[in-house]
Amino acid sequence: MTTKEIKALISLLDDPEIAPQIQSEIQNLGETIIPYLEESWEETLDPQQQQRLEDLIHQLQFEGLQQRLRVWRDSGAQDLLEGMWLLNSYQYPDADLQALNRAIEQLRFEAWTLLRSEMHPADQVQVLNHVIFRNHKFSANTQHFHSPANSMLQRVIETKRGNPLSLCVIYLLVAQRLDLPVFGVNLPNLFVLTYQLADQPLSFYINCYNRGVVLSRADIEHYVGQLGITSQDAFYEPCSHLDIVRRAMRNLQVSFEKLQELGKAEEVGQLLTILMENKPEPEEDEQ
Image 1 (cartoon, helix red, strand yellow):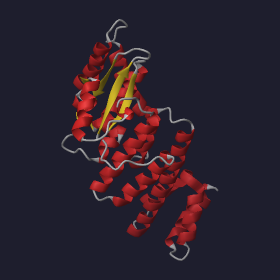
Image 2 (tube, helix red, strand yellow):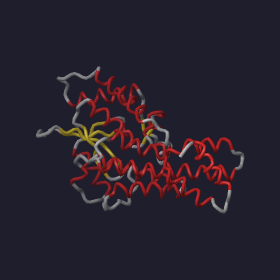
Image 3 (cartoon, rainbow, N blue to C red):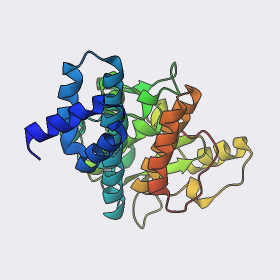
Image 4 (cartoon, rainbow, N blue to C red):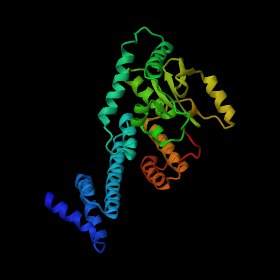
């Protein structure tokens, strides 16, 4: 369709008798029509028309996000940054993946200048702790623990505040770019990292919500024991990037539920369904 034809189509949304049919036709055009809808929103002074346009834009963005999420899942869900960016784009459709990449790359470069090949793993972790928690002052958002912003990587990088999972994701992305054997671990109610050398007994855990404090397996066992639940191998072993993004989505869904934003919670649930692949959802508030 030409620009003139698109604008003429959008103008027909003013007619309540044919508006549903016009909305359907607009949705079939996909996200490419969004700039025209935004331009129309700026030109109209009718609040009802503005609301119709806002709803259409959101629906088109949401459908596009669902499709991109399926592509990410079907391609193997290997790129953790992309997966977290896709989640981020639910709230911030204009979020820039390359801007997030540059922020992580800056952290990686600063840590790289301090690392030495002969360093003990514990010292390598201290370097990352120094860069992320001391130099850049990332920390736990204890005052607004259930804020949706804690699950949005863009906002966490901007505010330097996050929940256990989002802080771990930043740490993990930096560590992986430095070729350090650091992985995510799905603990109940708390997400941590593990440093595991292949075919070697050395391993320990990193609690990013407590500024990268190092934990032993005994510490994790004690934590699980305090929760009064049955211990599982998954509490001690690395999880996949797909597992991490699933958990981030569950956290975001819970955040919206606590804010009584049930429409958003339902939509995030739809996104989560795309990634679940018949895997049952846990009921606990994860973080």
